[in-house]
Length: 447
Image (cartoon, rainbow, N blue to C red; front, top):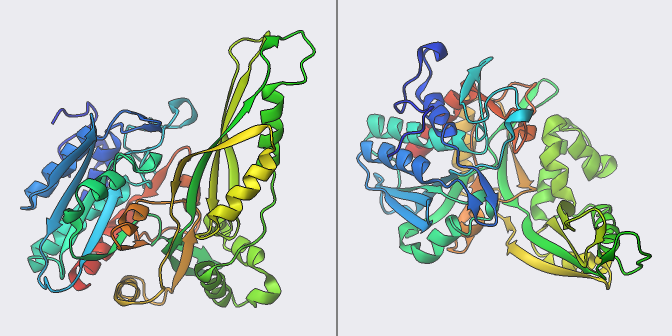
């Protein structure tokens, strides 16, 4: 492996950082591998980070497989035999890529793995090199204490999640489905973290996630000098369509998962969900509302605009990218409305589409999550929620594997955790990483 210039030996630390718990040290090392993924095939790649985790898995006596979907786009998968191999296997997966970070906007080097103010700072600290590290230390603990987990675990580190997983989880599932043989459930991001309502703490278990539709809007017009009177202006057409789509007020939509989410949160808050209303219940969850409120509505957010090449030239083409997230089953209705809002002069092209997911808030895995969290944070309830974004559990669903979001983190009440995802100065408390290690190890040992 070609070492990152910032990285140190796995599990160790520098003198300036003092004695770091192993999970934090590994997460720090992983942050120091710049695995930026811009999408559209542009990426720094995950190869070096993949070699790092592959080496760590080999040190645990496993035989991981490295899968390269394209140059430097590497995923790693290893099976851990359990004590009771008659039980269905559990897939535990994370991703190694991260979204871009502009150092000019950060107070620290986003790829420096800085330890400051009791937290680990850096791109990927919560999305999701924290879980990548917790998987290794929790697995190490359960092997050391019990010899093996209760059931087979399939440990996976995927490439390309931040661009839809086509070169990561989807590639592995399509070309190497045998690696997941016998698995019935999976855990990954984005759930398991605590929220504080008033003076009470609860944990959100992700039991569903929205469908994903990435579309491109294309407007065409007449190319001309910028001083001419041109009514057939591609930029004007596109701008109007973008404003209509981005400004659409989508109504509240409840599914089985979101209805259960609002009902359980309202019970926790001691309010009547019908009298209070779903939006108000969601907004009462504080910083968690960033995820929970968005789960109640379709969202159609314009994200990228492209047009023209010179100030005095009217272009004949203008494009925009729109990120659409909706409840499972609403895809056709939402796309029809987006096309209506775009208008006859603007084409709507689907760039990438993936399924939404909803799982029961019950069954052996959910029951074990309740039991494990009760041992490590007695009295704190577990609430279901539907994620407004998406995860590699979409790829797992193609194999009939039920995916849940469970990255257990006990967080201070003043931490705006959802804001850390793709945000500036992303960070995670060191104590939260140690908590997650203990909870995951307990889950591996007992489920």
